[in-house]
Length: 234
Image 1 (tube, rainbow, N blue to C red):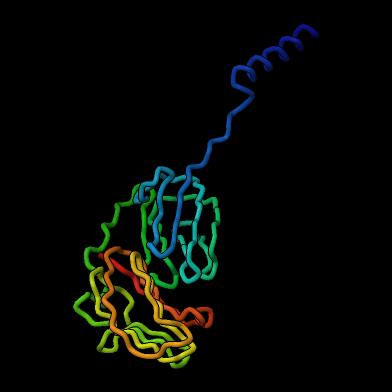
Image 2: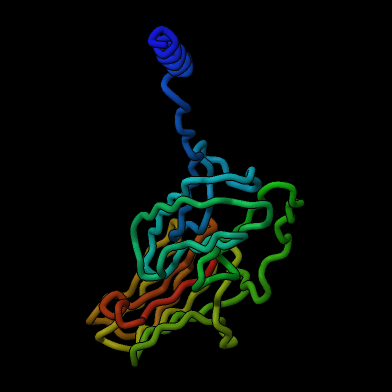
């Protein structure tokens, strides 16, 4: 009997040694989501934009670079994201199923969005037309700061600008308060009026060559809500 027990112990030990002590855990693939002035994007660990994935469990790393955008991912079994005022990085473990997943900035869901499919779902081609109401460089724009605690970017016809084609624009800048300034920021462009001393009207030639986000704000009172943005597209 002792010989039989010893033989069993030796057999189990040999089997464990042959298998390396048990199965090794499988590392989860990583997805990288970024939201900021350059736009919103989801890439894989190799840096390629995500359009289609296999079902399974993934590590989602989000890099939120702006306090007036957020990254929100939704789809079958998944609803995660950052807050609008949050700036920094967050990590989630998500399980993707067959279906379509969409990621957006909740503040700008028309201009800042993307999608991908998982499993056996036909990929929907991206829209070929720009969002309705997109402004072109043929339109003259008016940036008005003050005299109250408001700042706006509109066409000369009074239409609020939310989406713009890249190009060179004529922008009439109206600084209406000595306690304010008018600051315009976009990829490759950064200009403002003199804060706390200047009031008046200026005309700027604004070259917007790259897609991304155009921001306009009053620097002294951005935290009080004097800020806004428009999406730049090709």
